Image (cartoon, rainbow, N blue to C red; front, side):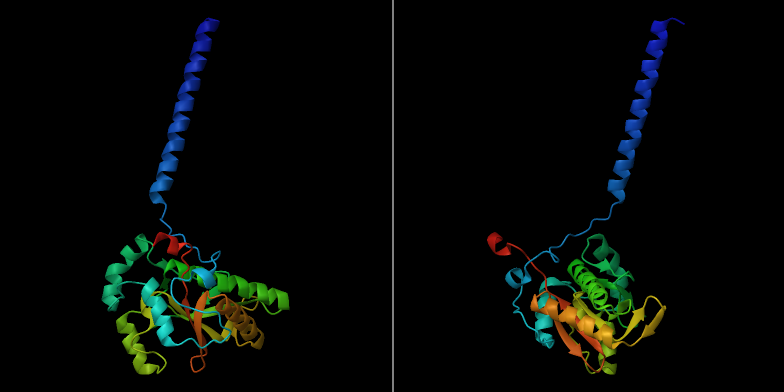
Length: 250
């Protein structure tokens, strides 16, 4: 075989190799794009809530926001059609997840979900950002004060009207019309915490102080509404949604 033919054959193989490689890369990128879940981005962490909260709220150090205030923010920013029953939830939840209306909440390095009996582990995206920020600040506070290595525990999230009605018969703090119906609201326990080092659940004065400090700071920043429920030993928290420059679109 002459040098010219060898060279031509080499070039042909090289071109075929390049075409195959490009085809593989294009196929991989296409599949990634097809399989990628659409994630609704929020402005929660980096937004000035004092200025841009999309419902009325003023800075406060008191952890006693009224139920009406929680409901006002929940109805504006949460589910437009709360789940009527457990069957209704099972029918609609996949569509809500696909459209990023709700996001599933799972255990992570910041918090642990307690066994849920009257709620579902789902929230609107902004509320997930909120509990993640609480968790991050809580961890930083523990490190700063050289406290134990804790995660806080979430005791309640999204509820259907059916589960809410059942709960209201057992718990006088649970009204029939709750912000929990809208996926905007969580209950965080201060009764006990998960000790990561010991793999145990324990009460902690230090944990309470750190968690209270974080939630108070975020309430002053208008990032959330909160009431401290003493009988249930939890913080009942509703996210405040921030809409930067929303006024300019009106």
